[in-house]
Image (cartoon, rainbow, N blue to C red; front, side):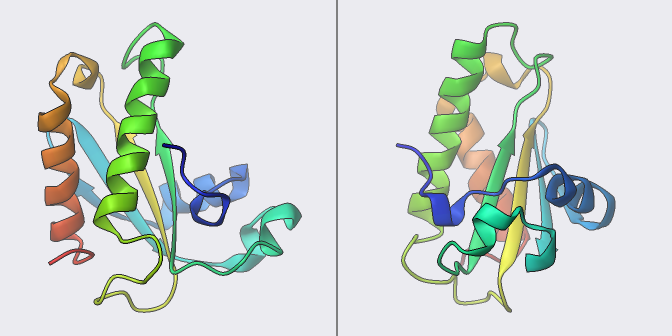
Length: 132
């Protein structure tokens, strides 16, 4: 399932800002970066979208897997997991203002079982204080 537009993170300036100033939580195959939302960095098309307590982007480089089909499958898997974990219609209880999340997969993660990746994603969200 695709991530709804109101929860998608887009725009080069947004991603650059998260990479530079975001808090990092590392796992063996994933990196979670968090940053308080700054609406002025969003592209104009997204500023008019309904407000959301969180927006997320998933970055999967070609170093993770050569085939785009496999990378897109991993991206959809993580999108679906995030929707279930963060309850798309409401803010996580510990959320202080809107947040931007960026999940990056490390090389070698494509060979792991989906359950391992999703378990690590849940663990990183818990470390960040987004889920109980």
